[in-house]
Amino acid sequence: MILVCVLSLNCADHCIRNKMFNVIYFIILLFLVSTQSAKMICYYDSSSHIREGPAQLSLQDLEPALQFCQYLIYGYAGIDPESYQLRPLNKELDVARNHYHAITNLRRKYPQLLIFLSVGGDRDHFDEIVDNPYISLLENQAHRNTFVNSALAVLKAYDFDGLDLAWQFPKNHPIVVENRFKKAWKTFKGWFTGRKVVDEKAEEHKGQFATLVHELKDAFRNDGLMLTLTMLPHVDADLFIDIPRVVPMVDFVNLGSYDFQTPERDPKVADHTAPIYEMFERDPTHNIDYQVQYWLNNSAPSNKINVGVPAYGRSWVMTRDSGITGYPPIEHTEGPGPAGKQINIPGLMSWPEICETLQRDKELDGEDAALRKVGDPRQRYGSYAYRSADVDGLYGLWVGYEEPSTAAIKAAYVYAKGLGGVALFDLSLDDFRGQCAGEKYPILRSIKFKL
Image (cartoon, rainbow, N blue to C red; front, side, top):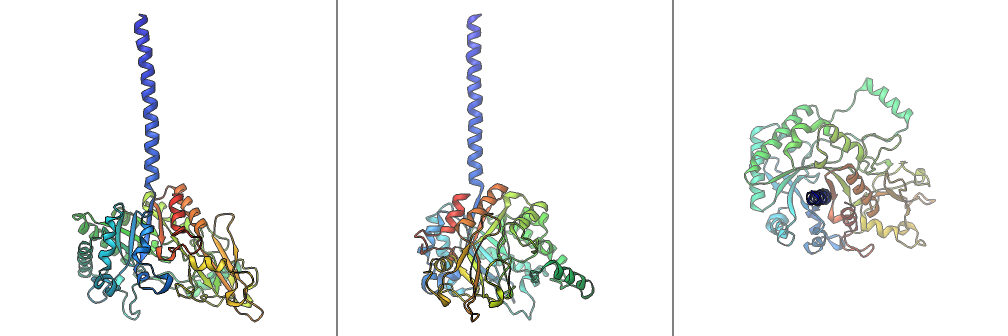
């Protein structure tokens, strides 16, 4: 009897240990799965390969980033407005110089990497007088078939893992930042004058795009190719995306949750370009949290939603009427700020261009003067920097931008919400040479380490 009790106690103790081991093993497994689930999607603008000077991103410069990326999205292909076939936007580079193959061959060194070709991305320019080929393609079954077949042929010929649809739908009209009185007056006036319509056939195009996504998915299935969707800034998902039909057919969705305010669309008012949360007396849709919640509330699984984070800033020219505090919104601005010395695009500054400006000697003046940085202690809206106009009304500049610390805050938001991951737009605008602090790709690193 004593022996039986001892054996029973030993058995009970053994069973408890086994259960504890199983619980611990399950917790560790759950932790590993959760840490591996966050995706790092890296956009690569191939036009950076042919830039001149320090902004040129060679394959050798690109490689240090790839250890942090699970997906590399090659931008951009376009649509031939006559044949409706998928076409390279830079045929000399992409095909003649075999850059497509050079990129997909990087998978040999980085076997974890999946490489997609993206179509559209606001890089496909066409004559606005004629129909938008991205819309006219949707309206015709034969055009859709041509596009699907050509896309499949290109992906297979150059060994891409999938296609990303950065579809160039008509965009929302700019909304000027206004106080409550002006906003109420404009709303009242709109009752009598009507509002601008983005697309009179939006409902039809919404259904046709969902059909195209299904057709692409069916065509890709036998070859195991993937399909993703990139929502460009200012494209209204409510107008053009049938989420319950589209999301099950794509592997994930990258939200263009940035450029809510740009000097091209909003030349007279400078403001935060990519806030996480809604700002007072601003358009309530112009923030990351609203965009994320919209997709989640319309049946999109959280693990398929990736938040887009820029690696750059947007700049405006401040005037004497813009004031001296720099506190946004800044009214009476005069459009895009001057082009930086590397990217050379008015109104857009890469992170190394911004960093260099912030670090300038405080004794410099004029157009060489340093900017005054204002951080974001509440971690809601992002950083900005400015230089008030001088007594002659010259050299004023306001920049809203992303930096490593704010990118990490957005990655923490993604993690806390249980979202799919982060999409970085794009590698060529991060500090890929380590000019600022000696570390290459600091924005990418800050995102990846936080995830």
